[in-house]
Image (cartoon, rainbow over all chains, first blue to last red; front, side):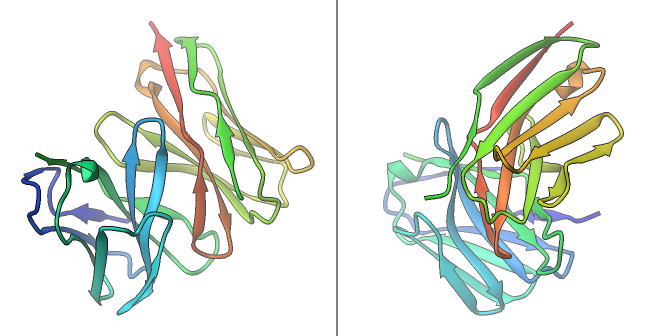
Length: 113
Length: 110
């Protein structure tokens, strides 16, 4: 079974704090993703990584950065948290071979006050 | 741009079949997926279909693909209360660009 784990299920941070969300997968997948999920907006891609130290911006990268130093770990960083970053954050991983199934972690519900 | 549309809500009685529909605009999608999301949880991959297939059956789940109309559906036979969740369809372009629908909330009435 593929396992994608996220460091926290719930997180409460103050405006202006630096926030780290971590994600680990155990399937040796090349690709890893960070999404945010908001009511009525579905899933929006923030960043993805197709290899160690490689990253690509998604649809909404502003206010976020990422780090991938090891294949199994992909971190999302909020440099200076703002209230409009209150959301559910979902990490996912996928193989680079067909059928490219994407597996998700349980999510981190982040509240910025 | 690419878009995936789903109806927002579906309500069925326990034991009936559920059919969740999805339409997509990107004709280059190679694979199409169905995910289930329970409250407060991540997305769970249910099944997928390759774009050159018309149908795929997996236990209680049947996926139908009409490539001409760009229409995808998920049929759940003998729907149970545990099937109550949000269901997302998603299409894949290339090897890492996944486009998700906004989700259909399925409510199963006992």
